[in-house]
Image (cartoon, rainbow, N blue to C red; front, side, top):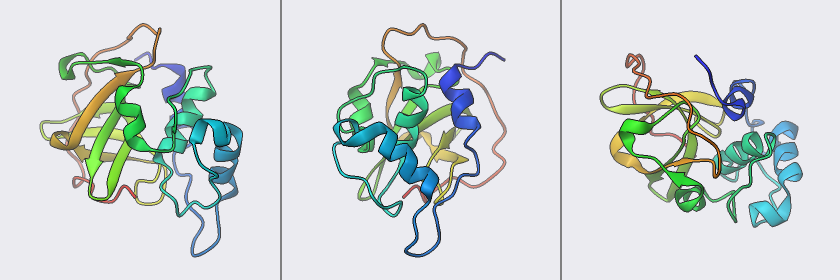
Length: 166
């Protein structure tokens, strides 16, 4: 299966975790520093601040893709790029979700009947692949000016649906 470069970049970061307690992950803070205040919209200095948008932005920026304003805010991604219908999803699609207290953003890698399989940051305080309920999805976006490659990927529901993306 052919995957876009930004999704391969995201897969290479699987397993990256927040530092325990009041410490901070130098890797996650490094991603934020590289993106900068202008892109993130805030001074980002602690991995206790939700970092799913930092992760998505870093993977896309590594591949020369322009990011939305205030990329650290998950819901900023809901109007970025081009919209895709659910039946047109392809690996690497940016999915935006609602959650109590905010939003969540990550990359589509597949789906089952009830959930999208999402490669994202800040999923249980790490970069993981999690199942996120389809009914929480508020936007499906593809990078601007890039051709959509691939098609929906059907997967088996092998773990519980996530409720911890922050």
